[in-house]
Image (tube, rainbow, N blue to C red; front, side):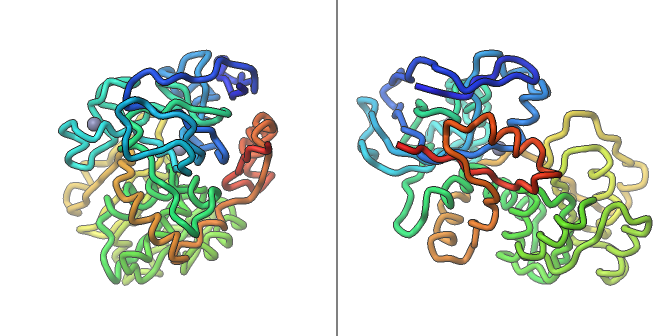
Length: 353
Ligand SMILES: [Zn+2]
Ligand SMILES: [Zn+2]
């Protein structure tokens, strides 16, 4: 089969590799029909994730068809159309029982880490993928949900919702600010309204992205490059700051911004994947009763989000800006990697034959 292989920093290739095989009775093999590229894949490509070794097939998002099942798999069958979650879940360890799949103790990839696809085991940017703990790690695509919609539930929608909106403890009436209007920031914007946010402020350095965020549910926008960006945000509140500040970029500057606009008693929810240490002004923040949260997505809300997509309540198709054939993977990486000039949000890759 063909797959996108990481060859070391800055190098990837769509090339021939052996087909995956069932290794454990709980595995299934999925033929990838639809996949996409994540910002995290770009971090890997830069060499920011040293755990990813040369030779690894990348990708942790995908929808496909089950082509083979392990001997103990009884709730999935060949031909099932499934969403492969970016997080493995063995289903019976102590963390899985708490819904904290991000820390699944299953041995696949590494004990205690849920994110293994395209990281510690071969991923979904391939014609076929082996899915461990399949019965508890995939979701059947319900009627009325397309593959394109389903693939957005592998990672970005649950990540924005769980780590941004839920960890931020968003409540009815809250003013929520989301810093960064990339795919995950937009996922937080789209799902913040589920908890009744009264205002959702999109903050980004790119005016076009701020305008685009309004089509995802942002009620207001602020350009982060403006000298008075903070005063503008404060003016959109009662003057004391936002209830929930969601950081969806992953650099020290934007985390600092979040701590500057949060009101006393408010929440800073960090979603961004950071590559450098962040300075925390604890000496100033402590007296403001701020809660700071962060995390790796659990994907425990995937079934709920899937229902809302099926009902047409979450219009996720608007995340998709570009379409490619699976074999055009390298071209898709180039388009996604130059998002500032191409306007790419999510690029969708589809099997052709
Ligand atoms: Zn991702
Ligand atoms: Zn587990």
